[in-house]
Amino acid sequence: MSVMEFDPVDAAATVATFIGTSAMAGIASWSLFDVSLSDVAYTLAGNDITLATLLTVAALGVTIATNDNAELSQLHDQAQNLEDYYYYSVVGSLGLLVGWVLVGDVSAFVQSQDLWGVAYIGLSMTAQMAIGYML
Image (tube, rainbow, N blue to C red; front, side, top):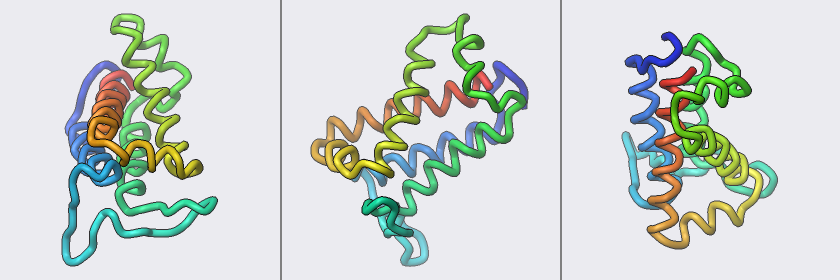
């Protein structure tokens, strides 16, 4: 749990992010004990929030909370040794996640084509690994 190090909690959260985002994008379906990640947990601003969305948000929250530096504002400064696309992937992933919850067209667009779903998963995974490593 230190800066510039990937620990086991980060690895578990990365797997949870993959599972959650792949279910959100409609690329994969995950279920356990007759509960599917595509099941609607509740509705916010007229948009359905699925268990997959909650899993993805929880994985991101766990990664941020369990690392030494929980301030995303310092992420860009820490990323100076790495490429800027890591920082932009974090900003893009957070923006898409908020958009997914508040703007129904975001989820409809990502789920409309497998290509956009795979791109969403890739962006989210890159962001998750960047946050886990840099924070």
